Length: 451
Image 1 (cartoon, rainbow, N blue to C red):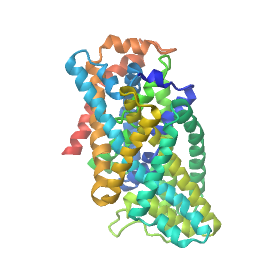
Image 2 (cartoon, rainbow, N blue to C red; image 1 turned 120 degrees about the vertical axis):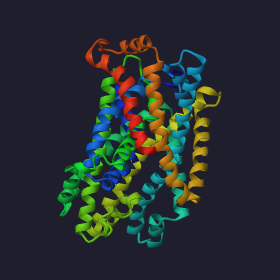
Image 3 (cartoon, one colour; image 1 turned 30 degrees about the horizontal axis):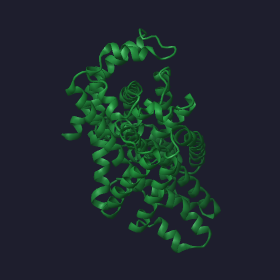
């Protein structure tokens, strides 16, 4: 069964919302502000924006192009680019590794997003005068983590079971505008508070001496690929659900801009919020100047900030913010779970409903193992997937796109798009850029990572 049998996106805006939803997620609202706060604020932002332009945009378009050409799952889509048994098999391996990576990403993603749900419910328990329940919802306990990881996975399964148009597209159209409105409102509110301007300076004024630090480069590359879902196969799957006539350069630009805007808005809200919290007496930095609780920034600084505001406002702000985080987690997880689901549906006679349940069960089991061995596995899985596997998969895709896929076939794929002149400057440069520049940039940064 091909992706065509499973349905296409019904509209351009439906695809943009779904693809932007995939890109916009925990990586933007949890990962980006945390990385920026840890790696010098403005310096990280500058490197991140450069990598989005130089690598994120062209590689995102490459994945969408491969997916749309193949009209199938990532393993078979990559295999179709090959013209010998060897290249077909290598392509299939790269695609299959992206499916495994997507599944593993969804495990820690579900744990994180489960925290967002519990933190969104905690203020309700406080309003209802149930302090024991509120404490359990915000305490870092195995039982809390286990329960809400499963709750989040169940929510994702409910959406994915409904298919492309009725599930992914319909819910993305509803959730993404809500997410953007809440982010803008949150940023405006935080920036009006005393102490926010200091945080704004940290974010917008780069320390150029930090720009070439290995930690900043590696962190920004991992954030670029993780944020845009490059190297997970998600965009190949979404590309397979696109009509051949769609102009990929424009669609990719919309998705990339939306993703970057949301990451910036999240940083515009959270980093100034740190300094507002500090102004209100909350300690956010250690004596050596390092950030306290960097991995759990939004779970420590923001609740402390909300508490310092007091009154009913603190509960409303907490609920709104963590509902926003849950929405961001859900829109991304939908695309990631779709990767192994689409593979099972195409390769077996299993129905979409059963395939979704199977994938959900596997993710739930692995996530539960991580929950019960949190200190040793959680950080390890994040590092293996986002900092190791995703850049290597992206390198494989760039090499296949540039060196294995026959140029005439690629040009034919480009020519099918509405309103596209394959001889224009952009379409003459892009294949060459993906062939030479993207692999070079990825290799340079991977070498920094493993040095």
